[in-house]
Amino acid sequence: MDTSNSQKIIAIETTPLVPGKRSKKPKTPLPKLQIGILIILQLAEPIASTSIFPYINQLIRELGITGGDDAAVGYYAGIIESLFFVAQALTVLRWSRLSDRIGRKPVLVIGLSGACISILCFGLSTTFWSLVISRCMCGFLNGNLGVMKTMMGELTDSTNMAQGFALIPIVWSIGGFLGPLMGGTLARPQDHWPALFSGPFWRDYPYFLSCAVAACLFVLALVMMSLFLEETLSTKCRPKFTSTTVGISNSPDRESLAQKPMANMSMRSLLTPSVVIPIANYAMLAFLDVSFRVILPLFFSTPTHLGGLGFDPATIGSWMALFGITDGVFQALFFARIVDWIGPKRLFCISVSCYAPLMAMFPIMSWILRARGEVDHAITFALLCQLVMLVIWHTAYGTVFLFITASAPTNNVLGAINGLGQTSVAMARAVGPAMATSLFAVSKKHNLLGGNAVFVIFIMFTSGLRWLASQLPDEIQDRDE
Image (cartoon, rainbow, N blue to C red):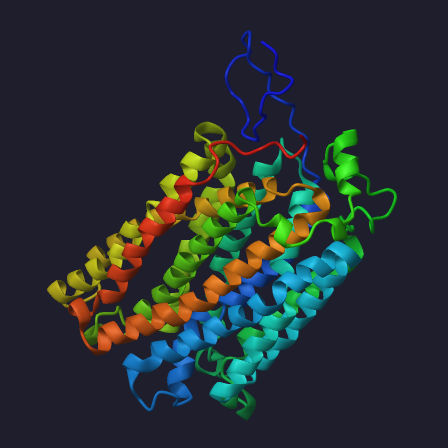
């Protein structure tokens, strides 16, 4: 059988070598040092962004923004959480395209510096508008996510890309563990450690300590990047940092594609179905996921008489930390193996099907609480069931990254494609928090469907993502070809 024109796929073949079948390609070892540094840079972002979740609702109450109306907290929390993504949506594509011209590292320096300054400003904010400005500043200056995914694509090839991209959701899961734990523990330190934090500064700025620790992580990431991270853009990297170093195929076709000028490919020419469909899936996935992420702490902090669990910031941080670390361990141990076993498209479809039961657990917990009158073992069991479904749901991220990276026609437009993806995701995440928290507030305030209308609406959105998932290609094209 002639296989010269046969279609190659990224998924590793595990079947025995038989006549008529192509033998699997040997795996290229991951460049551990460079990917390790990239992971540390990525880790700083989720820690800083999720550290505000345990106390943001309490902060809004203490600032008196709602006038004492607990049901209205969701409106303002959603606005603050959405504005970062609004600002990011306006600028992230420009940052990604700029990285295709000047290199990845200069853009990362700007992004990390901007995030460091903005989180410090957030900790010093005492009004609603100062919170808004600090979050917008972070979004405008932060194009890091798209650039980091581009670097991961440049550091891997078709044989080890699943391993590399499996690390991205793991990093966010670890950040989802450390960030809320840090935010919940370090919030209001004058209450926990009065001997150390008894001055008027800590009374006026009770959430600054958490923000200051997050800022220190950004400074550490900047230092490590400056000292150890190599540039991956082929036109800017040092001679010793060749394609062999980063694990990219040295085929003549690959090299000629990498040298193709970016100017020859307009943004419109990139909007082909093979690029748009994975990005649309990523955007819808991000919209539903960020909606869940903002509803979770809001549901935890909402008083029990309104159908929430009435947790304090420390308890919220502990539960969110458990969700994050369990998710990260599962992705680290099993994601790449599951992709090899059942294939990326089938895994993605299974993952997105878990969103409906994930959201359904919220009204179930409200019903249990009303029936029993207190938070007990039944609520704990329901939260653990929700954790299992969340872990499966989050395998969709690593899978969709494979589809997006493989859709790039040449390596030097990978930044632009990741920029398009991140712009779409930022727009989705800008709408998600404001919409989810507002629907939550309206549902509770007007007792729509027993206060559960928000969950029903988001369960209905799942059918849209399931249809988009069916449009993905059955197999991922081999980038080396």
